[in-house]
Each structure stands twice: as C-alpha cells, then as structure tokens.
Figure 1 (cartoon, rainbow over the protein chains, first blue to last red):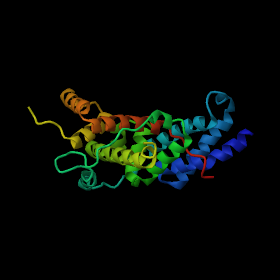
Figure 2: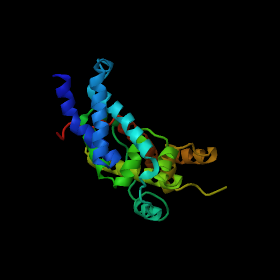
Figure 3: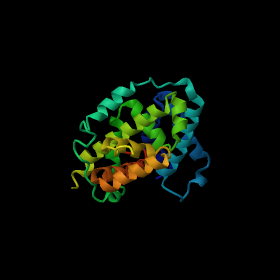
Length: 185
Length: 64
C-alpha cells in the first residue's frame, strides 16, 4: 500500500479524535491536515520505527496540545455544579461510605491490551462520558498533561478538576467492568 | 487520631494520587485501607490499568 493510501485510511480516525479533543470541526481538520503534511514532508522520519498509526497519533497529539495552548483561556468549559457531580457518585456508595456493589477483580487485564476489540470498548466508554468529563480525562490521560495546566486552561479550580477526573475514572471503571471484564469472569 | 477512611474517601484519594502527590500521612492512611480492603485494592489496580490502557489508545480505524 502506498503512503498516500495508508494516510487516507487514517484520515477519518484521526479527525474523529481531534474533534473529541478540540470540539471544533475546522480546528480539528487543520491539525489533522498539518499532521498528514508533516508525515508527507518527511516520510523518512517514520520508516520502520513504529506503525504509521502510532507515529501519526504521536504527531497529532503534539498538534492538539499546541492548539489547546494557543486557544488558552478563550474556551471556557462551563462550570459544572460540583455538588451534582458528587451526588451522582454518591449513589455508588452506602450512606456509611461503603461500596454498594464491591468492585471485583479483573482477570488478566494485561491480556486485554493485546486485543483491538478491547480498545474499541474503551473508546466507546470514553465517548459515552459527558463531554466535559471526557475532555478533561483525555487531556490528562491521553495527552498526558499536568493537572494544573489543564485546570488553568479550562479556567476551573484544582478541586473541580479532581472531581471531573475522579468521575471519569469511576465511570470508565464501571463501563469496562460491565462491557469487558464481566464477560471474562 | 481521625477515624478510618471510608471506601468512598479512599476511591477519591486513589484518583487524586494519580494526579498529584498526596500528603504523606494521607497517602499512608489510604494505602493502609487499600491493603485491608479487597474492593478498594481492585479499584486501585483498575485505575492504574485504566491509565495504561488510555495511553495506549489510538484513533480507531473501523469508522471509515
């Protein structure tokens, strides 16, 4: 397959990812175009080191970070009532702070990392998060940015950031448990 | 001495600990709870796994 046709296949997936992060179609198109251009300009940088997908994703991440930095405080995420987040999570616990349903162990989670189907499930779980929660989570865990950087950029308090990340992790844990690991138990 | 942490507090502290360093005493109390509580030990491992899995996540190719 030529580099062009490989990139053509990657175009939609990359675009979708950029859209999830940037929440802006034209900005997403721009970063993806820049990513493809960077690869086409210096195809030798890529050869043999990793899959094209991994390589392109790496470049795209940096482009997304650049845009987010530039955009800075222009885009505010509407403040969510922190209380309502906590309330939703309260339902997972008894009044005395014990688990309603005790989380069970996952069997051989490392093996899931070898299965593309697992990643499809994870992606579906991320897509199901409320937009703000998903965005903060992906900034933290996928773009691997520092929390204080994320809070500052989104104009939210460190505590609120922490609540959003906690909520994302709890929901994703539940979602993976239900949709992947329970079947393997 | 403060009363023991609840599972609910511990779950939040596990998450916080992934984003910032917890104060030493709080971290120790949280870890003690994790040692003694199966459910919270599972959550501790699962949050760490979630991080690892998310970092390995790539744009999917199936939605062409």
